[in-house]
Length: 269
Image (tube, rainbow, N blue to C red; front, side, top):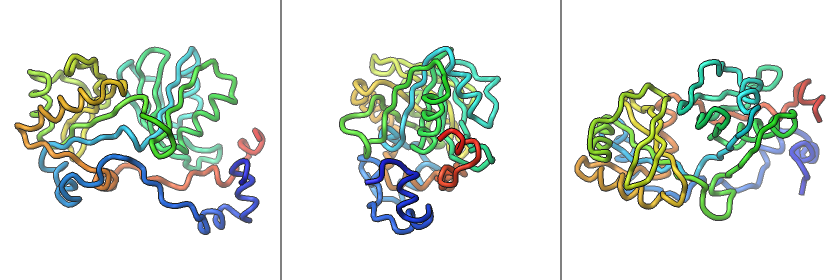
C-alpha cells in the first residue's frame, strides 16, 4: 500500500490513471436512513414545508483553538475574515498557490480563539496540513465522517429548513425566535440542553442549524421531532439530502488541486 498520495500517483503513472482505475467502492457517507418516506417527497418538501436534516455524519470537523487560530485562517483562506464575530460563520475557500481550487468548508467562530471547520475531508486536510506545518500556535481536534471513524461523532448537527421552519422553531422554543442575521448564531435551550444555533436558509427561507455534544443528540432530536408534529415536518433521508445542494447552488465536490503540485507546495515537500 502506498505511504502517501504522491507515491500512489507515481505507482499509477498519473493522477488521472489513479482516479480512473480506482477499485475503491463508493463511500456510503452517512448512516442516516436513506429514505423516511421516498426520495421524491423528501426532495420536494424542503421547498414547500418544514424539514429536518441530520448532518451529523457525512462531513469532517476540525476544531482549532489557540492564539494563532485566526492567523491560520487568514493566511490560508482567499476570502476576508476581517469581520468575523463570535457566534458567526463564514464559507472558508481554499486554493493552492496557483489559484486552483482545493475546496470549501463552513467555518464557525465559537470563541475569540476557537473555530470549527466543517466540510469535505480534502479541505479539512488542507487546513490541518498548514496548521501542523506552518508553525502556528494552535491545538487541533479532528473528527472524521462516520464512514472513516469508529464510534459516534463528537457532536450532532441538525437542521430545520423550509418555508415552515420558523413555525416549528416557535413551537420548539415556546415563542418568537430571535432576529438573527444570516450566518450569525445564537444559543437556545432545548429540552434542558444548551444548543448552538446558526441562522441560515435554503429555498430562500430562513432556518436554523443546531449543534451540540453527541451525548445530547437523542433528547434534542426527540424535541425537534415533537415540535414538528403539529406542523407536518418531514424527515429528510440521506439520499435526498445529498441532492438538494445542487439546486440551491452550493459548491459541488471538485477534484482538489493538490493532485497537481504547485511551486509553493513542491517546495514544502
